[in-house]
Amino acid sequence: MKTREVIVARGHRNIKATHRTTLEVTKDKNLTKKGDCIVGVDADKSISEISDEMKSMLKDGGEIKVEIYLPDYGLNESLTGYGSGKLTFTHNSDIVIRKSNFICGRTFLIRADKAACDISREIIDLLRHPAIELNLIIVPGNKRKI
Image 1 (tube, helix red, strand yellow):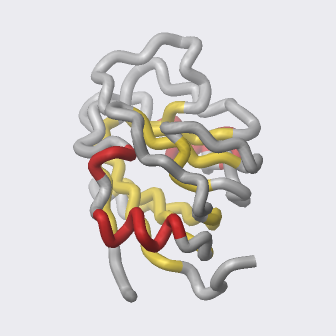
Image 2 (cartoon, one colour):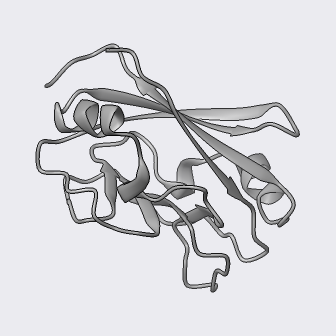
């Protein structure tokens, strides 16, 4: 199975991206300064709206690669995480990537190697502008279940 999912979001003036254990994109258009894990708003999909093929791949528990890509600047950064058979995909506005094993309805990946604070400050500075487009490009990784 070789699937690819792209989630498109936008920047926001309140993006801080300082959270040490999570990274999030949301369909919400507004962001308060308390949302320190959020790197993109006004996303075109939530966790409940990703493809069935991607959900199946995530439920299998394998490695997933995510590229954070700013198409207007050609900048990108990659991270790796894992799915889990316990994922529920129920949240209607958020997608959360976690360094921990915690799972709730918003969780997309667990055991990720990066959180919001680990993303390049060059990318985060650009994401403080609402006109900036952010793409999360999601593909299967090389490792299967661990």
